[in-house]
Length: 75
Image (cartoon, rainbow, N blue to C red):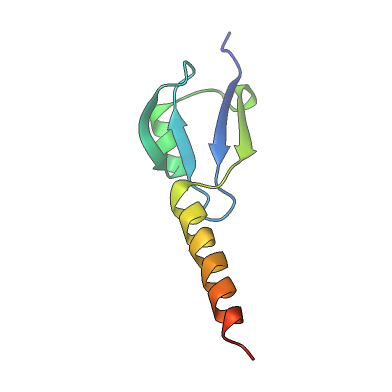
């Protein structure tokens, strides 16, 4: 019997956090296809939670910062 496995999926780019059941991280973020190849956990034992990856989070932060600075110049 396999233990439940929780991993994070970025809602923006659909990549998943590549981590083992013990929490160690092999690669940072990868495609779902690569993740399933490396971790052949049965479907019902795998759960996905939404969490923005590092790249999408930084892009969002830059977008927010840009919108704040561009609004400061509007008269």
